[in-house]
Image 1 (cartoon, rainbow, N blue to C red):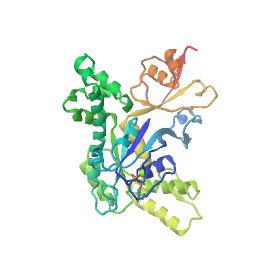
Image 2: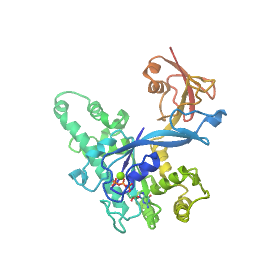
Image 3: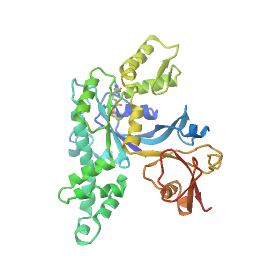
Image 4: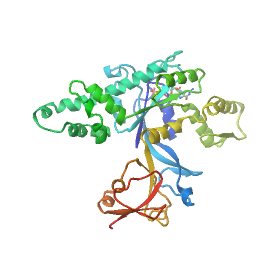
Length: 384
Ligand SMILES: Nc1nc2c(ncn2[C@@H]2O[C@H](COP(=O)(O)OP(=O)(O)OP(=O)(O)O)[C@@H](O)[C@H]2O)c(=O)[nH]1
Ligand SMILES: [Mg+2]
């Protein structure tokens, strides 16, 4: 599962990335601090099923703390986009190719209004403009890839009787697009106007949510309200990436207890440190409950992509793998996935030799077409 972070320079993409992955990357108020992409692992969080079964899990990836399971997702932090990037402004659009495989994009918007469209300091910049131009540039990038693929095959399309849908699917395989996604846009397909088809397909295959970042800055709240009013159909989440970094660091050093919502300041802080943390509490946590970073990842995966979590086990009685690890894996899968397709996701041999499954909650047998449900714990039976 891959998530791409997009936005203009200095909006806080690398800060969000650092807050979510704990990878130390360069962060600076100067535009184009990031040129080469950063890739790292962040986590979505769910209530682990361990409590349903009265066991303690041993995750192979991520972790489980106080019943919260952290499931890995890949995050990409890339260079900033400027208006007219499709005409070569700034760093152009080429660098977006690093997020071809992303299934969802988080647009990091500077909600403080204190940077202009190119990321330079200003006052009273309107973030509505940023939402509009960044989305426009992303659609241009997408459209260009599709146009190239179609241009390359123009003669084939005209002279041979080939299925245009198949051709598009094959040509766009690098973009991680599913066939049903192309299918649902085909009624917009028109050789003479690829842009409409491209923007529909982009919307479906790479949906965008908005992280209204720098919400800690005075004046940002008004801009958040304006964004929400102007884009009622968008998912907009107030975020303070810088606060999340500060809280994570204070937690790591043992200065505070922090569980994503509450902070408890311990002794031993100097006056400035305490003041800084209290400011985060007052400007961010008391107002918005969280810094928003975790909420963005969870919203992208569970609300937008509608993924569910499934726990495969090798031994249904022990709920373990062959080495005795309890509930070792938590998979993010599509909400309409069938059991046999899940078997193939685990391993092609398991799929090829598939017999059926057992549901750990009911001990009932499950067939190949069983549609997986959230929090299923399942042993897959296969010929060995
Ligand atoms: N007050 C405040 N400042 C922030 C926040 N997030 C980022 N910043 C500041 O904004 C500036 C730019 O942050 P970066 O994370 O480097 O921005 P970027 O989008 O990666 O920028 P480029 O790599 O140049 O495209 C830095 O000075 C950050 O400290 C936030 O939540 N609140
Ligand atoms: Mg950056």
